[in-house]
Image (cartoon, rainbow, N blue to C red; front, side, top):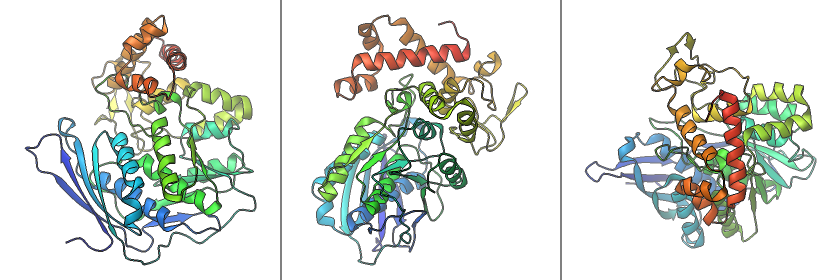
Length: 425
């Protein structure tokens, strides 16, 4: 029996021999989604309140569902969601949302909307700013959102930061203050996480929080900063699962979803889409100066394994030790980050042969070596296209980029990677 405010999710793995997994999320608790910091004077509409609930439910379901093995990943979800206006969600928004979630998680989503009781949602008290806000920019506490802001691509005079936080609340506020912006609008979810992890779908929650914040200010533009190497979601090898958290198709689908809910045009953009991370840092250093930029960059965090006292089960190796709240140096975000900040220190140093040759610590590094080698072996755009994985071809054929632009981006990254790690490929 489903409770009135309860969402239910059933996840089916690739192998039918294994039973489906089920989880439930209560959306009726007062303040289960909590905002703090500047909030505009306009109330969050019922439709965008539903959007917040839906995004938070998807995020929480991914956290609560037990992890499956790589060979039996979830390929289909059946989700029952209580919303304020089921009739609205059963029309155009439903199809867009199923497509968006399917794209993010490479799975099929079947959504069923039921009537939510009419109790008023409470998020936070209005605390408007003294100036007009025309856009919302996501501020994660990572290097890319810092670079986009530090490069002057958004202005404190018309932009409000929006953040989701677990442990990085203070860091986000410090970065905003150092950049001359008002305190960010920060959101969190009440309650515990679960045995799983948030991997594929958390960017949907971040965008939904930004949209709700934008609505309170009357803004219709959202900016998400992510370097082109990760935003393109091109995996270095086919076996590596890369999230599509800032993919241009995601941004397009999300803008379509918002437009279908309010019958108004929205814009979701990524100004760093054609830049490597090193190029984004260079833009920030040009605008803020090297000294300020280096101090701020050192405050940011990019690591998958930041809070853990180990990485891939390894705590000590070759005289190096991983501590909690230390960047590991060997995960995908750390490898990309090091190409932008070559002299930064990490728990494990991939310039050392011992670390590179470790079967776990060096795994992602050699995936990128293989990727970079293929890029540098392609002397013409046509040769590059022949060596690209399906994800890159989808970018080109879908009209999100063209072969020349992708060629420039990937060759620039390959040169940075080789220079950073002293390779001959």
